[in-house]
Amino acid sequence: MAAAPGDTGQLKRIGFEVFGRYTAATAKQNSIVGWVRNTPSGTVEGEAEGSVSHINTFKEWLQHTGSPKSRIEKCEFSYEKTIDNLTFDSFRIIK
Image (cartoon, rainbow, N blue to C red; front, side, top):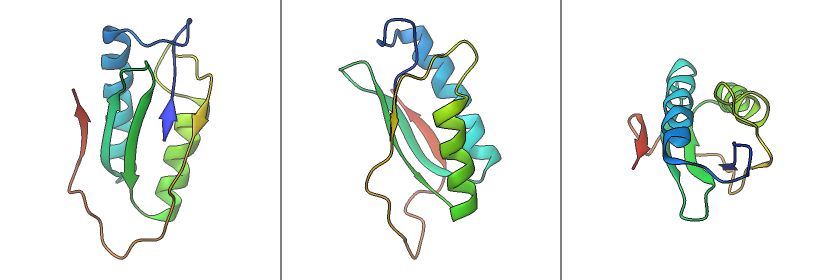
């Protein structure tokens, strides 16, 4: 998944910290495990695992809500597949 909030389409360090915290909190509220990180190109990427209904709620939040004052310009999801077991035990921000 990738999302790029911010006025210029580029993320600043402080902006990512805020977005990352809200993303992690929203993931935890929805029993989602995985990770999120800022990329060198100024976007955000990550992996998320959970029940189909919780993943759909999380995707909706990423596509339409995000953190306060964020502007979501584009949000893509790829490599979606059904899994038998979770491969992560928590949701974390990779710095």
